[in-house]
Length: 112
Length: 112
Image (cartoon, rainbow over all chains, first blue to last red; front, side, top):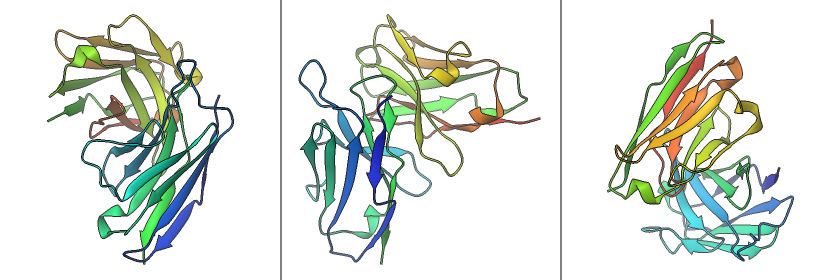
């Protein structure tokens, strides 16, 4: 199974600030078809997860350009700029390249 | 608007069965692979099973193989998860998802 390791476990940021969350996979996430199926999700308090980023760097419909994804192979990053109150929650990375699908353990973002 | 609405959750004794349903609307259900993802209380996301858009293939995590069955009815735009031989460790909120979109979740508690 592909193990997804997220860091940090939690972080606190001031409104208007910038954060980076790291996600590393135990194996390359490059699929045989050349795509890299690495996604980022946010789970806001008492809500279901929501897709932010898919295939490493593609923002999902309606997602602010304050969110950006980057990386390749086994090393990925989510950056959030100009942090807003609504950004608080737990962020998960997830891989869809091979079964079983796996997720990171989450990064809790708190607002100072 | 994409909607995924789960139903069928509840309290069940160990060893018994439960069947979850997920009614989909707002998109062409038969075009999408569908998944069940669960989240134990205060824990992270755990993929359970996926069914290909036409029902031709299914995938399961090892811990539910032989006990859970994912299925779909494209004519009714509905996804199912039959859960047999339930264990306490199956206690979780179960989300129906395209992974782009997620339902609100169905709570399953396995306890005597």
